[in-house]
Length: 319
Image (tube, rainbow, N blue to C red; front, side):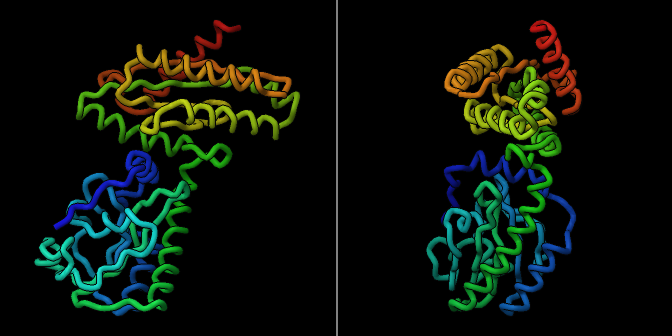
């Protein structure tokens, strides 16, 4: 049996998946409708909307299957998200990657598998829409087109979920998405005794930009700051626009003392942008940095509140 490899963008992919807050959520008709359609259309016993988590595949919809998840190490969908097209196994019992897989030699006795990767808005592959048969079969071009159509419908439903947790202007997480992501992250930090710190940002004199140049220019300033912020931080750091001109970032495996270097890099990039900019205003920011302390920060709100308070002290000192 061949265990599926991890995609090159695994860290960002999992971050996007968890920001959707869809794992272990209740059944939804909009997804169940698609798997019912797939079973009927292809006359197969099983159709799934499968989401590939770090160590499992969890089924948002599972028509014809009594379990809600299986291990990622034995999943067919873990292989499917490594490619761009439809992943097809005509007969798993004679495929060296799967012939001794528990899902093949035991129930549900998979023989045929066809799965289409489901992409999020950032292009990351969250999982698949797949069909499974306990008999070998071939797939026609017409079949391929129909399965891709169903997968496109599933992607639109995932996009609707994702848009609810993304900030439309900047494309990064909104407050709701950030709260979900940070909730997962700080629980992981507690389990693994990992450090983390939160940085709360506020753009200085943003109201003046809006009042002087209009809201379109204000939006451009917000989007520019978001781009510089995400480019400065690591892929594993969690970044969000909390609201208005306020942003936040959770830096994983980073104590407050090390965050000073991160802030210095950000300030350097902001200074470089201001030096090259032809606009008659400059971007600047105030910030507050707070170490995550599980004894003090019982929830994400408490962590944000401490960061906000420290940011306000910084802004007051600037005058």
